[in-house]
Image (cartoon, rainbow, N blue to C red; front, side, top):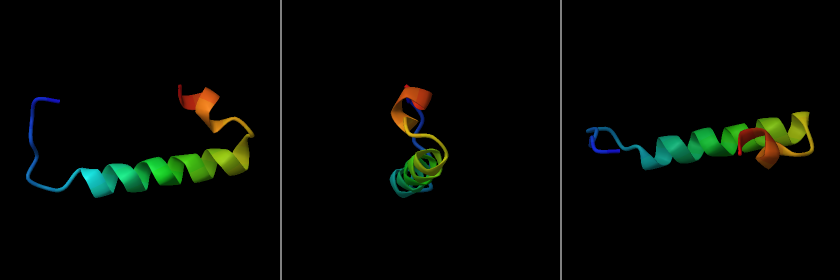
Length: 36
């Protein structure tokens, strides 16, 4: 990532990651295998 956006990326990325892990954790038993 060479660009530096004016809006904060850290909190947004954290929210997205948490949401994805929670959503996939409830859907399947292996969320990590699904993304990585």
